[in-house]
Image (cartoon, rainbow, N blue to C red):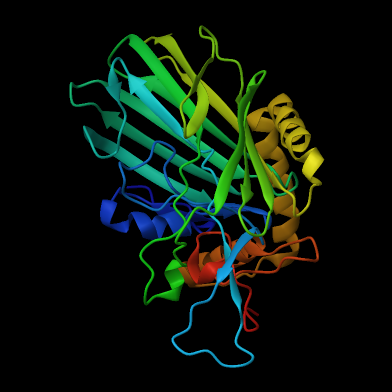
Length: 364
């Protein structure tokens, strides 16, 4: 058996087998960010209620009163907590009437890897539906380092033993959960007792769709939008309900032929964009990203990281595990560090709600 190339292996963090019990661990390990925008390494199609979804903007927070058992002079009046934003990663796949899910059917092959050198999260699996349809599903995701508002996802689906319709549903989900149960563990964040993000706009803008929210107390605004590359043989149709908005397309797929979906995402907040420019900014950034296409965005990402690693890489000889570990930590520091002179590195980076997104004095 051919041994893996150490040079390649030492630039990747790899999950070789799907394990539902380890979902939360890999959601954090595979989180992507650019110092401004962060996304947990959750699956686009979801896990049927398992896992912890999360999308964050560095420093975007809500405030709430602190309740003390006893209160003394000098105690802080309010707490500030980073917020989980609307989830724009949502992509669901239906193969000839059967919904793709890692919790149904059979996973025949599986590999997910974070490419530290190129800044892309990749997943490849062969899945067999309960009725025996097999498909090769390949997914790539990036949060762009030089286009701070932008993320992108590419799905490639290849039917392996059938011809039939394939449906993609792609959306923004506005049902944001702000914490796990967190009474005794600050790593899990904090629970709010009432609504903290109010929906102000949910609308289609030509080939894009958008959600805009505002925090109740701090009055910070945030908008996110999605659009897609055209797909051969199908037209994107608008779909929405009271908590989500997106598009759906059905294509006639043939055995052995690849069907590709490219999804572009943009987020912006009033921390860096004037309120009146919020919607034009996300739509403009989205249009620019879609015009570039996924491949060019990936090339830009690789070029940025090549320059980063040229000066930041640390070489360790004789210990591959240590080599991967130091590169992993450097990569996550890069992803977590704010670059605007206002934000810093939160205790959990941009990978979750832990420690309420606070910057601590001992982060260094």
